[in-house]
Length: 340
Image (cartoon, rainbow, N blue to C red):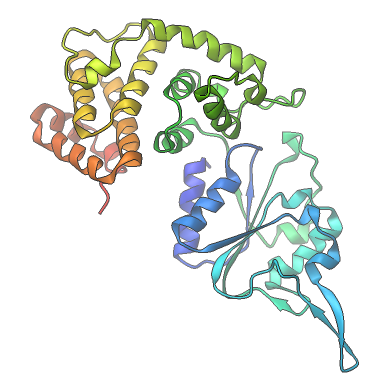
């Protein structure tokens, strides 16, 4: 499944209070841990990130303390006592088999020793696969059989949706829109390689004027640098957003077109500018580029202001030509609802 589909699945588990233990599989750097944290934040519940690979068996079971001639196990302080949240066993299969065995009772029976997981807590885990060259241990079959297993793969549309709302640098997004295969390219021979996580780091470095090769690798950085030369041929995006783009032509080169559409979506500061971008594309570009801009600008505007998103949707309904276009793509755009 895509990261976006994973987020929707996890949100439904919380919404429906389905407490099945859940294991999330996927390559490193695609945002598994971030999606779990975002799910907890979206539902205003707690999260405890527990790395079993860094614990000894006694750390999880607790310590024996004598009481009236009987040894009682005192559980560790990092396990939840009350409330609601997600007990997240990240990088579960990095833990040695003995620790995975200790976790088996926690995952199956929701308890370990004398400790019991409170009813409001979900038990989720995540791990990399052997083909990702991660130093993982095999998961014992009895433990694996106690999980709901979710398999997630990198997906540019899911990354772009998040990146638009997060304000990721337009040049990085334009490059990845043109070369989506560069979003995730694991190279076990190199310490730095491109992934959604490393591109988010690259955004910060690039915005500061620093080389991005240390986080995405030399090959990806060289391709990105070559792509930046296209910006010398970029039309005046700010003029278009100001409603003065009548004489500005839509570029013929596909790579520059991606840069223009992403630039319009990210630089639109309010509903008026976003609407001007729509009007210019309706007059100058073909349907697929208007469609791409529509999805991107709705996400970008929503990330800046819910009120501006409402205003933009209202303006599109008041423009007959734009309304016809929106109606033609209603199935796509209805996924991007105005906030209530």
